[in-house]
Image (cartoon, rainbow, N blue to C red; front, top):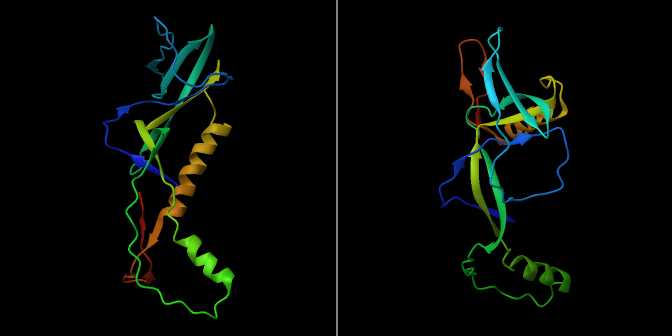
Length: 177
C-alpha cells in the first residue's frame, strides 16, 4: 500500500509528453536549460505552443485537468507510515475450528506495510507535443488522459438520497473529487 506525504509545500509544474524516447529518468546537472516553450495566439483565437528539442520543431497542445481535480508529481520513498498497535478484543478459542480458518484469522491481524509517496509538485494541465504539427484530438496520449479522467469520475461517483422533482423522481450523484 502507498500513502501520500503532503507535509512539504509543492511547486506548480507542467508535465510534458514528448514524441521521443529518452533513456534517462531523474535529474541532470547542466549549466544551461535548453527547454524553452513559447506560446502565442493564433488567428483563430487558440493558443499555439512551440518549442525545439534537439533541433526539431515541436508543436504542443495543453490538456487541462478538469475543475475539481488536481494532478500530482510523486516520488516513491522507502519511508513507512508508523503503525498504531491494534487493539484486539479478547478472543475465545473454539477447539473445534479448522486450523485453516485460525491461520487465516491470524494472517488478517498482521499489520500492512504502507510506504510513503512524496509530493514533488502539482499540475493543472499536461502538454502533449508532436513533430511539426499540433497533436490532434485523436492522439493516443490525449485520448488516454481524457479516458483516465472519465474513469476517475466513474470510480468516484457517490450515490446520495434521491431528489424529488416536479416531473420525475431522479437520483443525484456527488462526484468524489
